[in-house]
Image (tube, rainbow over all chains, first blue to last red; front, top):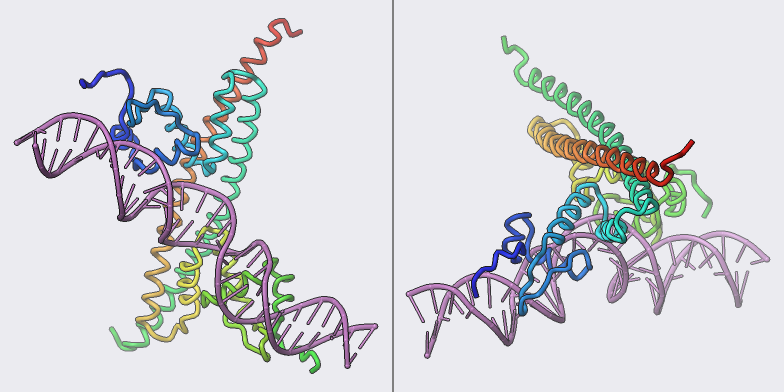
Length: 137
Length: 137
DNA sequence: GATTAACTTGACGTGTACGTCAAGCGTACG
DNA sequence: CGTACGCTTGACGTACACGTCAAGTTAATC
């Protein structure tokens, strides 16, 4: 059977393109995040699947769980451009952003703490090294 | 036996003070993060345990695993007398710092990304709202 | 002294996001 | 024609940080 360049992709092409494992794609399908077509027993991922996967991977970067991501995808998908849905998406994203900013503030705090600890440690190390060779020029 | 105010705390006092469950404290003990004394079969958490728990909880907020936290605790605990040990401590702390800075960079990236997404979404929402009432005012 | 509250130790359960076999099928290649 | 590769579906395993019983013991209270 010749490779009909019908704008669908095999699981392997998907993996290579998006740097995920086959297991991941099957897992996302089981979670109803993707809906690849079947050619016999084999999956064919459509343009829509690829668009969704992009959003999934980006959502993961933002710290959404897969369930949250599915919710967002469903909102986007359900009759596309309804104002109420867009606003809901916006609201959820806003919450996530606040969350992330909070985490970053804490992380900054911790980084500064650890930095000062390191400074302190470095000082002690220098001190001990001096004691080890009290007359080092 | 009267309550000798011997600067130790029961598991319940610990839970109330630090807002954790007994299970958590026992879990931390099993993980060798805490070393409460025993009074008969009951735990008595010392000042040292409380100091360690504070650090544990802070570490958790920053996204460290318990294993990493134990490593850090061992660092803080290392008595600071031996140069080699201190330098080892310093080295590990440096690694952690690099780790955290890397995570912060990623988080920053994701935050900026999400912010621009939000902006885009807000624009679309405004657009739809305009279409919904083309003759507003 | 008896009840009950609080503590104890197992040991299995939970949720997330997959990893890792096992066993089978279909087909492209030599 | 056979075999090796890639895909398929289960189904169990993993890591983290505990939750949730169960069953027993101790301590405090009436």
